[in-house]
Length: 223
Image: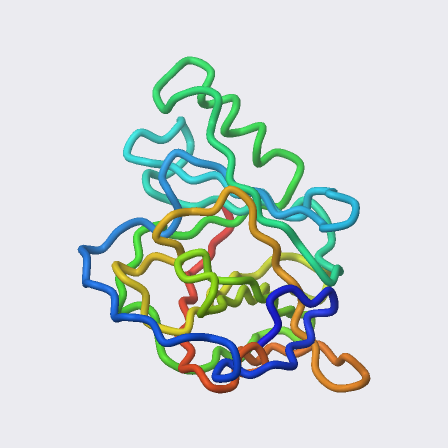
């Protein structure tokens, strides 16, 4: 398995480079992404915004639900590499400036919302079949075990390029349902392509053919 191919084509198999790791202890259900935080996905070369995510805790701003993720599509997702950045809110939840900062982070894009709390049982073994041919699968090193595992991010897009859903992949059913045990400050995702023609793939087994893959698909709704 490659650890940083610029094309997303993975040539080395898991068993060639990656060591075996111990089992993780079970923990109670936790939140998918840290509460009261914001994330953004940017285009790797231009750093132009593609997706921006704001996550509420138990004290959301007016007009928003508690413990929910709000995804705002800011630009067309037609790129071979994207970067995830984790950023904290300047204003604390409940403060006077928090509602405006939360709203401004999502403004300018089409917004979808999904529940934030996820259990390990909601991660299903197998491959998710995209609902749209415009979907794209990206891979990155797994921050929980960067030397041994990979994760996948499948972005489902509509015919007009609109965001329909986001599906996460891991190579084991994650502890407490978390995609990350600790959210990375910055993480690069590369589109998965296969063959000499570098055809885009939405199959996580083209990331790592020798692992067992689990996926989580939340129910996104218009916000």
